[in-house]
Length: 250
Image 1 (tube, one colour):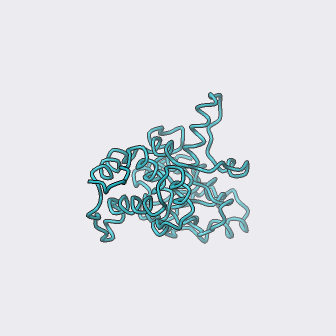
Image 2 (cartoon, helix red, strand yellow):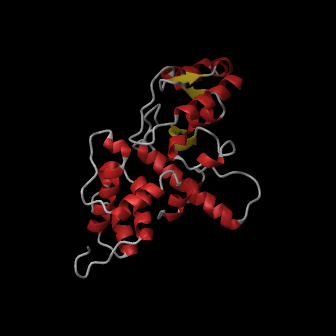
Image 3 (cartoon, helix red, strand yellow):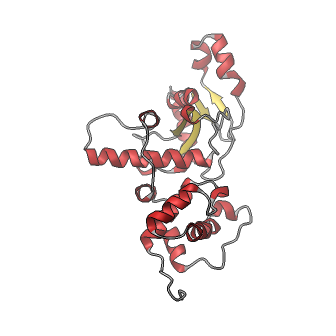
């Protein structure tokens, strides 16, 4: 039962908190985090109350449970229900997320499909892609999983299965890798893939078509190197296998 004067949490409020949960690193769930303060003001809760709910969701996260974190005893039935019913519902979570407006340069980093579309649909796509980019880069600690480059303007949230290949997984973070711009382009072109053990695989075309100095500087050092895995949303092995087939056919 709520305490006297206490306002019960609503489903919509918890959905917004859950969306924020996926945008923040595990170590940034305290009340001093600016995004938590912003959301708290928007839904008229205290930063401490939002932080409390974020930590409730964290205790339900299987990625943390694998590390020995157990569900907290104060997790409410509604907390559990919102967590469970929104597992994998990435478009819904993206729509509930509070995302700042992007600059023109930041918008250029998004994977926006070409072709005619309605303004409303374009807004939805941009929101979804901003959410996908933020979740993927957060999961990889803001670093390229191959080179560890950490400059945001050089990083891409790369789709393993392309936007046109699989609508169901367009916003699924397990369909994403954090790559620098060069290796993202090579990955997208089927010139670079990730092996079953997480190792970088290079297409023979790269060495045969590039100047030796460029290949030696930008690709050879990373051949067979194991990528850095994310804190959560490990890349889906089936998606990586499908991408490797595309590299072999390129």
